[in-house]
Length: 467
Image (cartoon, rainbow, N blue to C red; front, side, top):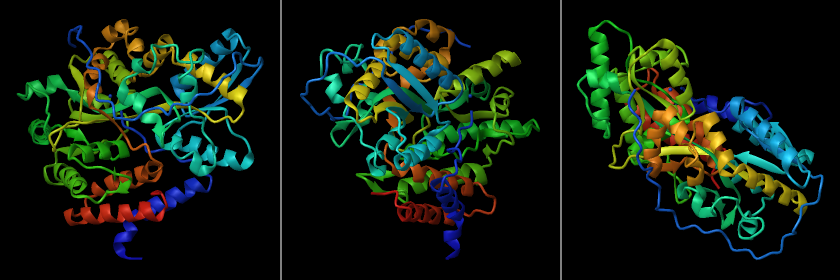
């Protein structure tokens, strides 16, 4: 094997270990006062032109009593507890005596593995909450999916909210595959930079960095200030999670896929990795945290920024309160090197996998119940993620006042773009993370960056992730 091919060998072993039945975690995510103002939330309006397939069928007027619906999801912690509570509440109050049996499958990888295993063992759920790249791969592994348009378009079984127009369009449009609506959005998070505004202002910066040049100036100013004080740290805590590396690729106009073609080795992605190489190796303005929990470093001003997601808002608030810190912080989008900022989003959608008409209808009724505005608001209150509908947002005025940084993140709804909702992401996320990991080695040379990208693209293709 050529020397350059060896750089990604650990990923080959990792992925084949996954497919053979082990259950490694998906690439993890490193975690995260001013007066709250009542401002209008910018609602995305440029919905991509995708339409639900119109299906005219007759659905029964009633659900057979006593159905048992098996519901698989990949949440853990507070969200897993909330799903248990939802199942108990719905099971006790629905008029059909339907019982929801919930199974937590820990994370996305384990859920995907268990769905694969379930096909051979004839043990599959009736309902799943899964990310788009899993929904889009269901038919590939032999699981038929229900087109949910047939329920939405009926008067009796449509959604409780104000129709599909109540959903934020950039979330609602994500679950259509080959003209079929395979899912409906229930949970969406987004990836941001956590930014210490007070630290930046003390360095002389009044505006948040929008361009990569402005961001570089700020993080390097923070690094120089820390060095002058003899304090360890830097402007950004280096992070090689796939979502972080992809966010930087998007900052430079890069993509993973274009018209279903893999373009990992394109020029824009090369520019992004060169930027990361420069701020880490050349400028010394990015640094490695010795521990995964970085919020104390954030408030102690060992760093100006770190990469995180919306679920990290709560822990950041808690660390600030417990530590008695006074610095003002906020979420900001990744800066742009290509003119337009993008906020990457991902999350779970609800989909029906049962082929039994009555079970499918019972599962749909539970979906309708979960998508009620009051239940959507509960999901936000437990997770700190985005609401998926405007009616849910209307119930969150108190939450917005209690969590001003979360409230400000609503300003970025118009910048939302989903991570790849294609099965290629299952493999590509590992490859991208591995490239980011290799990039920060002190032995890595700049001229190796194109090789990393080219070899990564070849590896994704060799593993059959591109259709």
